Amino acid sequence: MEATRFAFGKEILEIAKTHDDFVVCNADTKACGIEAMAELFPTRSFSIGIAEQNLINVSAGLAASGYKVFACTFAVFLTMRCCEQVRNFVCHTNLNVTLVGTHTGLQVGEDGATHAAVEDVAIMGAMPNMTIIQPADAVAARAIAHAAHKFVGPLYVRLHRNPSPVIYGESYKFEVGKATVVRNDGDDVALISSGIMLQKALDAADALKAKGIRARVIDMSTLKPLDEAAVLAAAKATNAVVTIEDHSTIGGLGAAVAQVLSQQYPCFLKCIGIPDVYGESGPSEILYAKYHMDVPSIVAASEKLVAKKSLPALV
Amino acid sequence: MMEDFRKLDVPALKDMARTIRTDIVKMVHAAGSGHPGGSLSATDIATALYFNVMNIRPEQPHWEDRDRFVLSKGHCCPVLYACLGRRGYFDVAELNTLRKFGSKLQGHPDMHKCPGVEMSAGTLGNGLGCAVGMALAGRLQDKAYKIFVLLGDGECQEGSVWEAAMCGSHHKLTNLIAIVDVNRLQILDTTAKVMNVAPLADKWRSFGWKVLEINGHDMGQVVATLDYAKVIDGPVVILADTVKGKGISFMENVVKWHGAAPSDKELELAIKEIEGVAA
Image (cartoon, rainbow over all chains, first blue to last red; front, top):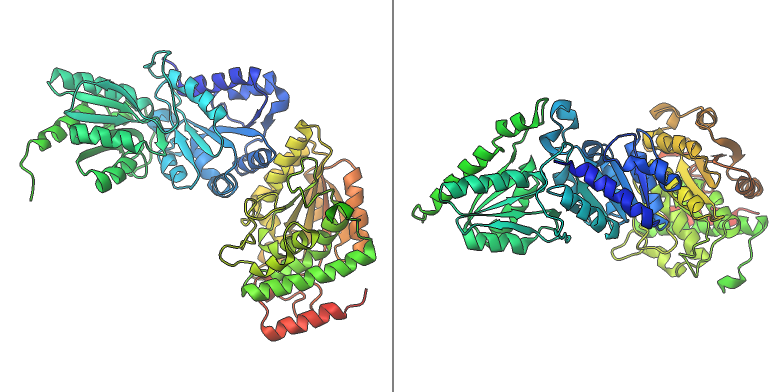
């Protein structure tokens, strides 16, 4: 078990040892461990304080002067408190700023609604020029740290707070805009997840296999631009797609997949995620169960979808 | 040729400021919309920067050692465009394309469309923070260039201005020079009535900035103060006492001219007035 935020942050610190082409801006949060730049490389780390609008504007100024900038804080602040600055001074200007947003989805648990970023992907995704990526585990987070360092342009990296299972082996390769087929048991149903929900999708695939339903599991690590080819291939093979995300079903993975499928390959679809509500205090697993995002719910939704396939088509 | 550019002296700067003012009213007239009032109040400051104070190479807009100018109050881009055009960043004939489809002179400045624009702008309260970032970068790169950033006094109502002000002094940015165009008017009324920003000098001083106060239309004082700000350790802010709509009697201190285009007749009157003013 390892938190994606720390895996990402520590890897950026590793990259900093051999690359001086980037700087880090912090806003007084212990977000992802990247704050340690201040001790390791003090000239390349800037403390901006509790001032998110300025965090983004300063980052834009540094980027306009030739630096790659990592701006880090909790996602709920980074994508909303300074939303206008991200739009006008990072995205419209198309500057080389990576926004590192941590504490996403319902995993903030006890901190409650104000700290649970459940609509951040919808907000960031609506901005032209923005790319959004989200690692499924610590291995992917480390690979994404290297990809983010090489990336040029506005980028939002979405990270989770709590330790989560390590899924990938060290041979994992990340490519911006490319989904990973993590498992392929067959053509009954395709489970497309993003971020740490991958483990639940894999557990659901196990449970479905025991029930005789063959699932394939796809990790959509890039949320924007969406890997449409991977979505269409999964839909054409299975005719039944389940999306699973730790984000509102409005404007996230499910909505993006629905937009592709409804226009290019209509098929059976179920979007699992947070309904149109805010988070609340409580252990994340209880919250996931409350919103039917836990493994039994994914299994049940998948079974229902597969059953629909055998019904006569409505004319 | 730009290589032959010589800094304009004060009488020549005054002449250039008249040319810039004429450009501003013509541009906004041709566009049918825009913001003449705050462009005219900032004209003498911008003219001094572009034609004397700043170390720039219009033929090399991205020359790495150039001084940077950030127009934080982006709606006043007519004055910026006129200065850039007259300084040779692009053909002055393009000035009459302001706000038109396909123009590099967008309604608010776009750094990727218009050469010489260091940072896009439009939403208020953001330029100072961007300038702080540029100043940090300049120091990190061990460069001698200065960052100039022009704000409005109404703009100082934005909280983000004070986030950036705090940051500029916290990081001891000796290369950062802010100028506030204190013309005392905003869209609805005077700043005193809409949301009092006074006392600005005390506010900036308490945020850790060196404060210089000048008459923003006394060209000799403007140039001397900008030069002085370059040699002292910043962050320094110049509070420039100005008149919104300066140079055109019917626009001076009239709230309406924040964002309105002159009619044909008003344009004619405006040009006559500007040209009639003796040096």
